[in-house]
Image (tube, rainbow, N blue to C red; front, side, top):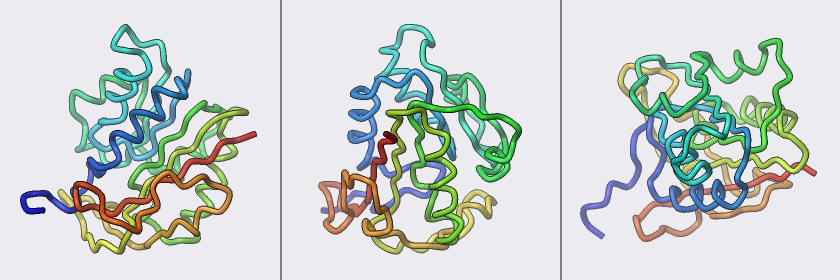
Length: 190
């Protein structure tokens, strides 16, 4: 298919997963959301649309984004955005728990061991019955710094088998209608 951009450079997630994330938000209807790597704030806007249905701000949405230069009007959909790394945010003295954690197009920006440790820490931040959604390219996609942000470099590749204990919503093995290969995994805390 001509004309489709295979992968968008961050701070945007792949548009081929938007339908999955929108459906999961609408199905779960979380009261609290943590968006890890808020970027341009797309998922804050999706949550306000598909969870709150555009009527006020009933859902508490917290974002974490280390690159302040991404700030734009979509950040207004969040109750608060911590301008910090995810590791820095998780080390803060709080024990906040969330009904849904979005870790979308972030894990490939860190070494595998660091990403695996963060998955464990994020699962610990889920409320009982809470969901952790993770997405990552389904193939190695080289990426250097973007917009002067060194944190945008891709440093690891994650396969569905790397998400043991997760339900795989999209396995990343085949190209979708947008010619993209994305892996999307969901963990539900009992």
